[in-house]
Image 1 (tube, rainbow, N blue to C red):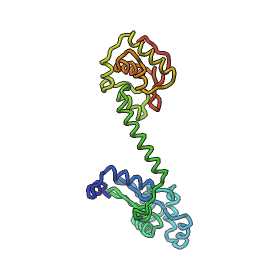
Image 2: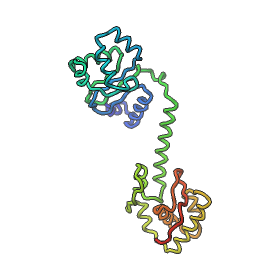
Image 3: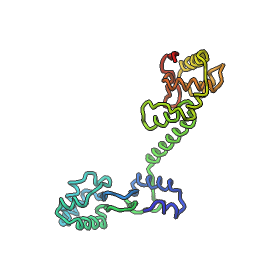
Length: 265
């Protein structure tokens, strides 16, 4: 299955097609392997009772199926990587015979077997349904929606955050602890342009501290509450306070005072 050719042929957006496939996979309708596999994959959609009945009625398959069950866990719940060469060695069969037997078992739908392929594979896990008969889980839809909303909110926070170094924001998002300022992004450059003397800095920081003593505030609330100074000067002080951990940013993007400000900078 070539997802690019499919998207171009039907004039679909490539990322929308990929997202739809992943959603259908999460719902259990199909399985998508986007790259050339290093291993074959196998899943047993039959119940244990159905498998046992088949083994009783077809003793010739007993050796291979029992070796599969001994060698690989989770075959009844999801696709598992298997190695036909190892199976052949353990069962004393030729590899070609193992592949033929697995292909036959797949054909009669006792198992679902995906041999090693050199191209991406799209496999129906269940029978192909009419669009009107496809029902999606509300829980999966809710989880995907919340994840998308969170990603969008993180992007908006990154765009609107004019206090913290862009590099620090990105590195923090990906889990790095206490990253350093880059010094070259728009936030860092803007910070370097504004120069305040000690009296001006102290006046702004004292106002900020007194305001935050009443509880966390959003940036726009802080800027509008500080009097007697230009907005860019107030933001410059807030950046310094954030960089030096005197102000802490909460998860909801509000700011709070952390500890007594050391004015010996």
